[in-house]
Length: 425
Image (cartoon, rainbow, N blue to C red; front, top):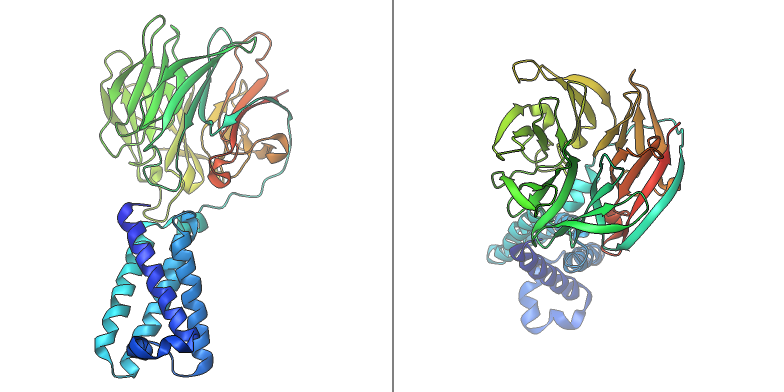
């Protein structure tokens, strides 16, 4: 919530509580309070109902500073209360008093538009009901409070690279404002160390590992772009994207170029891994989220299966496939699956997709022939799953590693991200 929206919400809440007190406390209706009586319904029962409405809206508007989810609903109730007060003033032939309800109407609209989180949660896309075919699961590690994972990749030596962020605030559009990103390298023996840390205001995104061991990572924040860590070298932000971009998923294409879907702009960027030069390689309305009401991203995860670039579109619950043509362009998309609000995913040895669904707390398998099933959910510690990868070591090639944020979307800053292993036979 922005500062201006917060100030308007507090002022609106105070005005509504004042009207509620005036309607319920007779002592306030004498003296200066008598001037405001035309704003109240004349009859006792409508007046009490109006007072309850104002109490609910006023309390919710003030509570919204701590619980942003309720702010939009407070604004809706406040709008109704303000319109009722304005109508009462007009019936009482006191048009001068209608200025206050008019200002309250404008404040209600501004607060609702400034913090529509509640509306966006209600408008989240619905996932299809799918059969449950659970895989054996074990929790590899639970991390400290506030450590939320966004991406995972596996190196050729079996090392896992986990992209984590701290101090995210999902109640804000600029959720990355105070973020601190990090990539943690976890060896097959379980030893861990940090290989990359981003400055404040840059969230860690999704990781890809090049054939030469170079690590690449997307990052959203004050300056959207891609980071690179070459073997033996220091981390560097080597590619920058325009303000308003949101590079999310990441993969290396069969042409050796980097591809990242833009969750905000509804397109795919192609990035030269050597120079960092980036250009729009694919723009498609089917990659965009719904305007205003969407909380889920548009284009989100991206991986190649052969020459087919597969993209999940979270807000539209679709999985699309684009064939990479010989001239570097992409063919028209085909629908691989729908009803899956996918985040990122892994491609299995047989071509199956294992799609994480973040706040829906599932991992969904889509077979090469299109059959869908849930292979992991909260019963297997799949809570806030954001990405997955198959192991590349000799002992874990049939292990699907899943990273989570521990349910941060609803659980708040004290949740703990986890690394979970699913056995795929």
